[in-house]
Image (cartoon, rainbow, N blue to C red; front, side):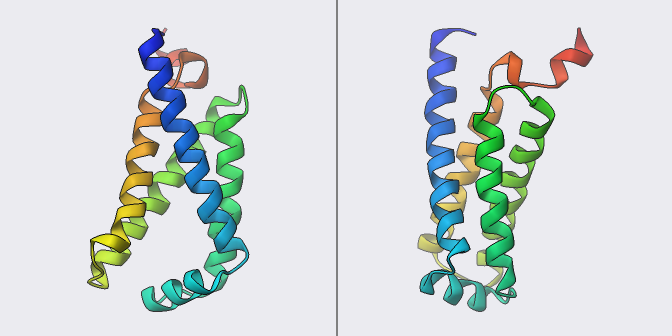
Amino acid sequence: MNRRKKVVYWIATLWLSLGMLSTGSVQLIKQKQEVAMMTHLGYPLYFLTLIGVWKILGVIAVLIPKFPILKEWAYAGFFFTMSGAIFSHLFCHDGAKDIFGPVLLLMLTVISWYFRPANRKTITKYLV
């Protein structure tokens, strides 16, 4: 993997991890704004705990060495969670400020996944 790709991967992955860790933490502690947002979107409040725990575990899975299948699941979870958040906000006719965070995290998820090193991929084992 050339240096440029490695730098792009680590920048995207660290920003993704920071974003998922921070949003997962505020969801886990049921911060007032998060409770209001979940209520506005029509989701039960226990989703905050569920999504918060999943995000934190996903960050751990993406950052630890090895376990490529676990990483794939974490990236998929991030993708589904963020795309679901985007569609939920669109469905509720929320503005761009409400959609910006999930869009950014979705983009970072895709960039991090795309530029991940070969030893963090599962598909290379089956193609070789």
